[in-house]
Image 1 (cartoon, rainbow, N blue to C red):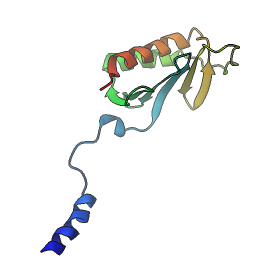
Image 2: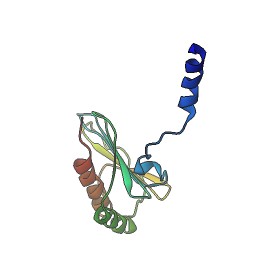
Image 3: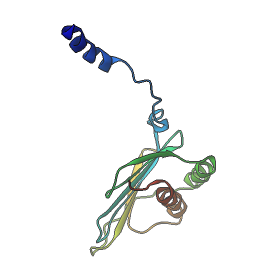
Length: 137
């Protein structure tokens, strides 16, 4: 009797979970990623939007949060991404209190300390989503 309970525990662990996986797990293809880091406060924010419209919001001072953008937010972001020109990475300026923005889009990673005109709408969309969806526990 005792042996059968011991044998069943590992078998139960092998069974698939009956809960539905989170929506972001369906698509691992990254549409766009924003990293915002630096400053005296040691900021480190990251927003990763997947191809299916779901996103992961991650801040240094708390847990990562997975949420899906609304249809309106997805349309707006895709419109702004269509006009995005990444260009080249910018050299780090002298001094200590600078914010570094890194965008990853269409297999390119570019870092800037000042935002070009085509970056501002994309960064704005992603920062608004971070403020809306990320909340500490």
